[in-house]
Each structure stands twice: as structure tokens, then as C-alpha cells.
Length: 261
Length: 274
Picture 1 (cartoon, rainbow over the protein chains, first blue to last red):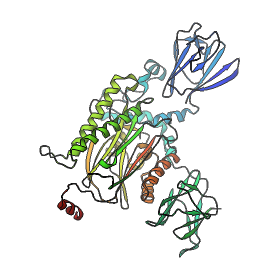
Picture 2 (tube, chains in turn cyan, green):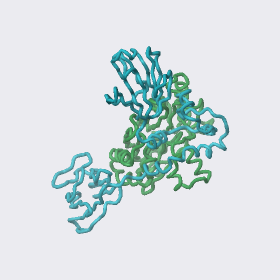
Picture 3 (cartoon, chains in turn yellow, orange):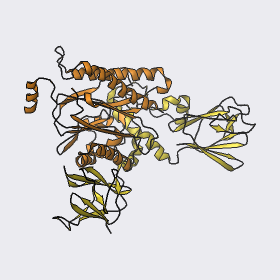
Picture 4 (cartoon, chains in turn blue, green):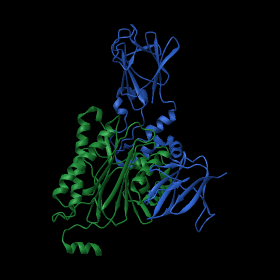
């Protein structure tokens, strides 16, 4: 999310995330950003945020709104723009990671209609500032026919390829873990927990599952009247985090959980 | 016919790890054998509005219709099952409502939603879908996708431009070619399938299928099929553990026993021997 950093005479006063569609700036208390200074009008300016883009608009203030030293009526904010109101400065910072911002936007489901993407993307500031709603890719207005659309649509988006691929890859847990059977016919047998889910027990009698998550390993009760016992105590209904050398009892079998050295 | 003793259901929906609000919407009327899932799109809360309208319109309208019309009856003129006609009409109605709202209110301009609906009756289910929300089936050891996405990616696969393997790494995952509420009219893809006791059906938004491989989804259902609530939570958790970049919604339905239509003893016996 984009944010503003409010400062005066080089002193940072506040960080304000642009979480709303309209963020108002002015001297009166009902504004989202209140600046109690006589050089600031009651309702001085507003920032309209649409998806990742923010637009600054002066609301007819007495002393004007300046961006990077120039007076503006309406302005498409770029990262690091400095908005000046009287002695106060508001620095606009768009998402910290430009790549991440794009990827997040990109994951939004969008409708593709025949011919929609044939127009090459226009230079952002003008296209966006002119028609903020048009920037939302869901309402394409182009005309054309279906045949050419797929190839053309694919092209402008490919740059995010690697990022998406990486994001979709399962996050690996920090350590590898094993189970060793301590009782029953297979006592002594070991099993490495390589799968995201490993079920233990007998279907219809008692079943528990060990899930491998980025935060570690967890055991959860699945079915059966009795809950699995960890270190002598039955676990609750929710997932129970496993620690090194925990002893699990389930369907009459004892199992030790331990991390691979 | 009350199906709440025949169908076991569980559902879970979560905004995910990145998005601040949930644009997915789910609804069900278990006793009528109806489940609906929609994944909305559009700026600000318009996506939620679109998906919410879709699930509300379809469940309220079908609740009434199913009171009066048995879904398994065949219309003598068209030769179609009543279920097919009902779904067609109600999807069209939902489309019109969303389209009109988006036309009349500027803040909703361009909103739309994907949709997947399953209606169970007479040992069968009628599935209607639009966009990239999916229905999967687990039967015994087999797990697979039943619906075919209306997406650019699927079109590319069909055209032979991409293999399934390449598709996994494609950047076009999120471009749907059909959605509810975008155009004045839309055609849902509707098919009928036979069901069997023991089958588990999964309806999900792309927040699950994009983040978790089909293989892992199948594994979770195999492992946790005995506890549907836990399975639903586990699927959402897996999507979130993998990054949770989108809203995640799942509905699970397990067929507990046969549910043939018809009240007569003869038809019941016939049902046992099918």
C-alpha cells in the first residue's frame, strides 16, 4: 500500500497509509489528515487512490497545493513526489517493492474479452490521470476479434513470470523431521516426513495427520473417539505444534517425533 | 427430498495473506443439494458486491423453485432436465442483476464474478460454471478436475500452444474469458454427472488452485476425507502457507449414500440395485 510521510522543517511527524479510496487533507478536524496551520485551508486537498495509483486534487485551497515545487490542480502521484502545504511537506511513497506491487495487481482475476488487449499499454500518467476508472483492466473497450486476442494478451504481462513461479512454490520448512515407531510390530522403523501431510493410525478407528508447514510440524486429530496423546496428554481439537523428541500415542502405537540432525 | 442426511458438507473462506478483503462468496442449501461459489473482481469492494449478488440471487431463487419443481423431471418439449433449465435461468438472472448494478452505479463499473454451482438430485449432479472457479472430484484414489476453466490459459492449452507443465508457470493464470455480470448476456457451461456414494466434491476459487498443486489438493482430501471440516481448513491453510496471494474459498461435499428420486417403493428398490 502507498503511504505519505508528513514532515515539517525536515522533521518527520507521521506516516499515513493510503488505505482509503479518498484521503482528505485540511485544517478542519473531519479531514483524514488534519494539519492545524492557518496556511492550510479547511478542506485543502484530496488524494484518490485506485488500486496502486493515487491522484492528488486541490480542492480550491486559498494558498494552493504544490508538488515538487509546482502548483497543481490535479496530479497523478509518482513515488517520492513531495506535496507542500504551507510549511508542511507530505512525501508520497508508493509500494516499497515495485515488483511486488505489480505481482499483487497481476494476480487479480481479470476478464479478457476479444480484442481487449490489442491496444498497447498507454503511457501511464496520461491514461490514468485522464480516466482513473479506465485504468482498472476489467472494462476493456477495444473492438476486434477473438482470433488475435490470446497471443496479443499474453505479451504485455510476461515480465512477471519468474516472480509468480517463485511465489507459487511451496515454502520449505526450516528443518527435516522423522518419525520412529517405538512399539507395535514395526517397532524401530523410521519414516521421514517429506509430504505436506502424513496420516497416522487406522481409518475408522483413530486417525491423526501431521502437517508440514513453514512454521514447523503440527499434529491434528482427524477421526476416532480418542484424540492422539502427545507426551502423555491428549491434544485439543486444533493443530498441536510438535517439538523435538515428542512422544505421540495413537491407536495403541507409540511414535517418537524428532528433527533430523 | 431432504438431502441433508445424504450430503455431508464443509466450507471455508479466507481473505488470504495479501489481500485486505475477501471478494469470494460462498453459499449452500444442503437440504436442497445446492452449493454455490463465486470469486468477484472489480475495484474496491465491487468484487465482493458482484460475488455476493451472484450467490444470493442463485440461492434465494433456486430455494423457491426447488420447492415446487423436482430437478430430475424431464421437460417433454425440450428433453432437458428441469435442473438444467433452472440453472440456466438463474445464472442469467444473476448476470442481469450484476450487469445492471454495474451500469447504474459508477463505483461498480466493470465488476464481475466467476461462478461454480452444483445441484445434487437423483444420484446425479448438475454443474454450472463460468470462469476459473473449479469443481474437482475425488472418487476412490482418483482425483481430478471436472470443470474446464474459461480462461486464456485453458484456451492456449486447448490450442496446443502450451503444455500443462508450461501452463503451471504461465503468467496468464488470472485472465478469464467468461464472467458473470460483464456483458448483458452470458452462457454458463452446464453438464450433468453421475455421483457415487463415497465421492468427495470440491468447489474452489483460483486462490486455492493457483497456490496449491492438484496433487497436493488430492493428497489432502485423501488424508482428511474422513473429516471434511478439517480438510476444508487444511486446504485454505496450504494455500496460505504457499503465499496466499488471493482470497481462498473451498466447499466440500461428500456423498454418504444413494439418493434416487421418486417416492415409490419400486423406485427405491431400483435405486438399491443400480
